[in-house]
Image 1 (cartoon, rainbow, N blue to C red):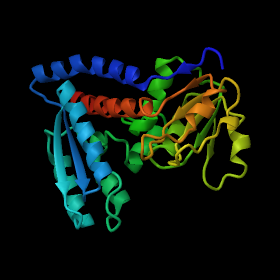
Image 2: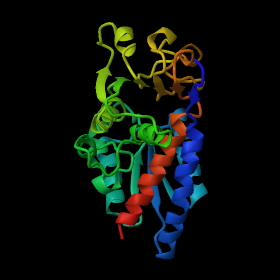
Image 3: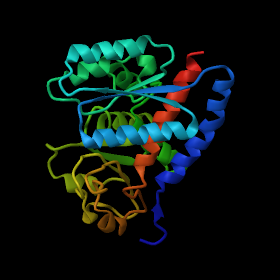
Length: 279
């Protein structure tokens, strides 16, 4: 399609981080260093990489990163105690529990133990409820990144038909709520949806959040639609067949370099905001 827009996530993320820098400096003048605590349970290499990336991003703008690495055999009770200690630590402004945790741990209970004012990754049930009711302090970071991208490129939402493919509690469901709160008409699709391609062909905006490489096909995309790929699969492959979908899309995110960088910038933004609200 002529005049297709490549939605550059790095450009959006850089803009967010540039605005954060003076806010961090202002906090430091008051003796407050924004601090994000990350908890990794076990030795999953992908999770360790994500934690390292988040730590590096913190360092670049002057946020302290407190890394806690717990062994694979950590019990639910031990993890809850670690989270409770961080909740009580006034030097810590944000808590991130890296997903997934080992199977024997009650992940939902662990997420919901995080204090709402430190839930900068938007994983608690309370945080989800606040987001759905349109007063969430810290929405889940990837949905927040999607809205940040839409706003940066001034893509119209009101009255548009958005189709979200995926219903996870930290991506598909919250982004559906956030788009609905911005007056889009939202269809949430999932593994049990009948005739998914036909539904996607009706979409003005497609959000792919299904966790399957190259899942969304080119002939599913109607002429001029906005395609936002929130998937990240091994080998830097998104959920959208980029080459095929580019032919009809009016705007599309690449993978890598699309939603990923903005997601990390949202985590930093929420941590700084939490530090500001702690004063």
